[in-house]
Length: 252
Image (cartoon, rainbow, N blue to C red; front, side):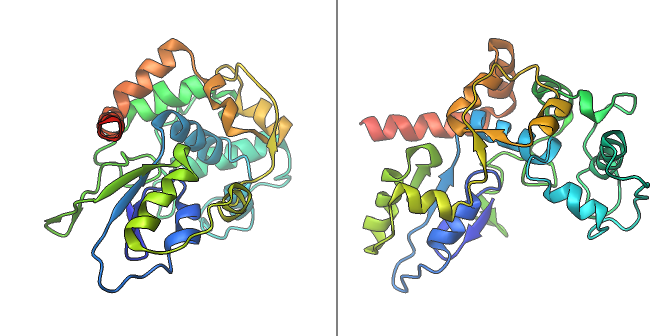
């Protein structure tokens, strides 16, 4: 979790780009108001998978090829061969050098064969999500302290409740923000999405690479079976507990 401007806090994969676009430059000098932006953990875990394992927008794969962050990884020729790319990217994800994620991927398993279920049970299930150094995978509730001072929030808003949710901090701060849904989508840099439905829980990385696009968020539920849903709820219990508390308070 990180601070965005003076008043907003948000975790990676929880709409942080949108939060930065909207709240980074909002500064009310005489107000100590703070709010936390959260994302439904089910949607957030799908976003983790598509962005970090599948790398649907090819940001990490492209950087590896250019050796932008990882000059210690040998990039074979031809890199454009799908198996070569998968081998290099897996090396990037599991490498112990700086700038890498060091994910616990099976050394004997081709990255192209990973599914969303594998990601949830075999990758996230083997991480200490309280201590995990990369905030993309950690709890959204992990960092409620700045130094030795506990951070307290006046409000918690959910990404799924936008644009109405942003009206809450805007009113509290006495500022105007653009709540137009089309504007918020552009501000959040929503990439090219496919209007396709699943089920996606058995889709492999290879299938996503072949498609080259990700589904609209409204189809994220298609990644889940009852078994996977239960596991994610177990793994991210602190986040689910806080969201349930917030929703209960809003009903009162």
